[in-house]
Image 1: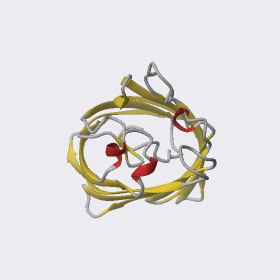
Image 2: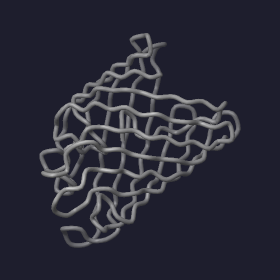
Image 3: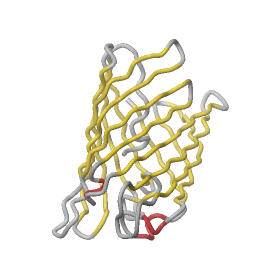
Image 4: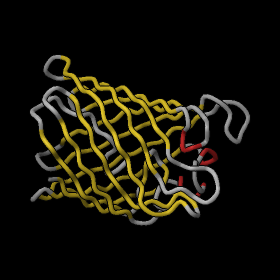
Length: 224
């Protein structure tokens, strides 16, 4: 969800970390969850030395008429190293959104498994009720964070969502989403990020089709 959704967790000493972020548009998997308006987000994560981790985050959202207000996610899982450079993890994440007066209720849960190597990570997610549609989905993503200097990192993401059954069209279908950007550490725990997101098929937009267009997103965040 928020800022950088569920990055692969490291295998380290027990610690608690958090973040706060202000972004020009809350984009998740290429879709605006804030009706193309700014979003204020915050979250906290706990990593245990055993590899167990858990966390929660919140953001203002605007998915549909009546589905406006505070959204959240709650997640937990287990990460384990593979040698000194790689790790795998498995977990569950639940997305909670305001309930509109009319169907659907957008809240849903996904299970996932992931693999990371240095600055690269990949995950596969499964949901049996994607955004409350009653439709099963599989989502696969691949992320890269490549430092080019001590303070500057280039970001890239590609994801593919596959509907496993029909939803408002004939037969299974899918679409891809993309993101490319740059993140700059400006000191004192603050980071600025500028990225461009896109989706290749707005027909499958879970919300208003206009919320799936290509756009640039700016964010200011602080970790603590």
